[in-house]
Every structure is written in structure tokens, then in C-alpha cells.
Length: 336
Image 1 (tube, rainbow, N blue to C red):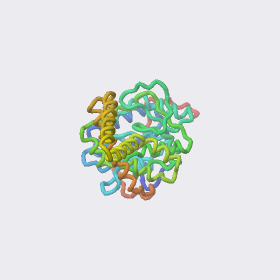
Image 2: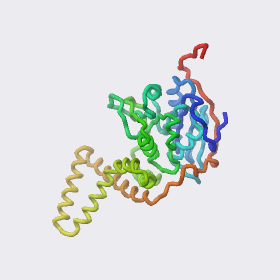
Image 3: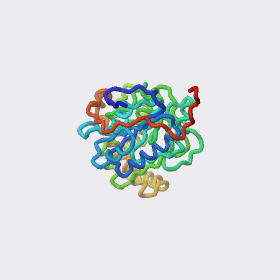
Image 4: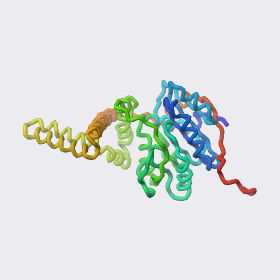
């Protein structure tokens, strides 16, 4: 099996490709890969492709213990979720492609059900619920995230993931698919457990990694495409609402009564949010939306290069995996 990131593979040679993206996930990558292989035991033929974004821990070393392809994006090039997904899809040969983060543990039940649903319906992509679920039926959605299963050919037909978006790459793809008329769904089962930490410094980490500027970059990218732009702006309603409220606050500086009225309404709004989320949750909500508003504005100043300019030749092939066969797949008939 030859792996060449510079030459796009043709999808459909095997049933499923699983793309795992990592960055310093030494604590979770073994559990993630073991869960992926276990969940694929009902799949006739599958491959696992791990794309690492310049990890400085032992992620790549641990991943190489498994029969999977390991690719590494050097630090001097764009490293992001979008870049990892883009690189993985370049070498994926599956009819379907599953995307999962390296800090997730895939459940065994969700994947077979999701594959069957895409085969039996007009849906081209499916997600599940992370960690827990109160959902009882299949729900049509505008985008999918977390653990994401796509019809590989349809994903490529809309250009796939943008390697230069530091975040929002899943939303970008979802809106491209929806604008093209395709159906996306969320299945009610839990797809994975996400081992992430909600630390107090999380907003700062997300800012450093570009998650807050990504929405603005995506909006700028689609300024000349009203259908996608409309979906993006609708998703920014809280940030735009906060911007409008701040503008009213500036306008209220003209007189003391207006300032008092604006302040009273601000306190009332905080109280409404605090009733649902608690005081700490309300404070976190407004801090995150504040970061998001600043990031949205900053992202609008950043241009996204064409995807085909990504330096695929710099991607290092650390290990070449093999096509795996599920142990619980139905046996083939002699005539097949």
C-alpha cells in the first residue's frame, strides 16, 4: 500500500476510511484508535489514517503502534483541524469517510447504524450525539460536527475541507453541502465520548489556535456567495446581537437617563441568562461571545488562500498502514 499525500486517491476502493486528527493527544490517542478499530469490526474493509499537527508529545509514537497510516504536518506549515482533515481525505480510498478527533472514544454501536443509514437513505452525511443523548429520532441539520461520516465522493464534489481555516471547517463543509442540495442528519445514538477539559483558560487557548477568528475568515471567504453567506450570518446572531447592544451602549452616553436605562436592561439580560446557566455560566457565556465578536471582526481581515496551495509535499509519511477487515462482517458467498 503506497501513501502519497500529493496525489489525491480515488474514493471507493474500500468501504470506509477513518481520518483521525491529533495535536498533542498522547493521553488519549491509544484509546481513540482502539475504539475506532473495534467500531469498524462490522465493516468489510476499512483503513485508518491519523494526521498529526506537529505534536510535541508522544502522540505519533503511540499511534505508530497500530496498523494505521500516520501522517505528520510539520510545525512550519498550517496546522489546524481543517488542515488535518484535508490531508487525511487526500489519501482516503473509502466509499465513506469518517472524521474523528484524537481525544474522542468512538462507540461501537453508532458507526454501523450510521453507515446503514447513509446507504439506505438520501442523506450524504451523518453525525451522532457526543457524550450523552436525549434525542429520540433522526434530525435533519444544516451542518455536522464531532464524529462525522460522509459519502466521500459527495464530500469531494463540494471541495472538501478547507486546510487554511483554523476552525469552522466542519461548518464550512456543511453549508457547502446544504447549499448544493444535499441532506445531512444527526442520529440519536451517542457517537463518541469527548475527553476535553473545560478549563478557565479555554477561551485563551481557543483564541491562540484561531477558533475565534475562523468565523470571520469563513464569512469573508463566502462574501460573493449569498446562499452560504446567509447561513453564516444567521449563525452569528448572538455575536451580531451583542455588537448591536454595544452600539446602543455607546449611543446611550449622550445622556444620563439613556445610560441608566441601558445599564438596567443589561443587568436584566444577564439575570435572564443566569437563571438558565447560573451566574458563572452567564459570565462565561458573555465572555465567550465577547471573544467571538472580537474574533469575528479580526477574521474578516484575513484572506483564506486556495486549498490547492496547501504544501502537501511537506507532509511526512511516518507510517503506512494497511487495509483492515472487520472480524464481524458477514462472510461472502462463494459467488461473490
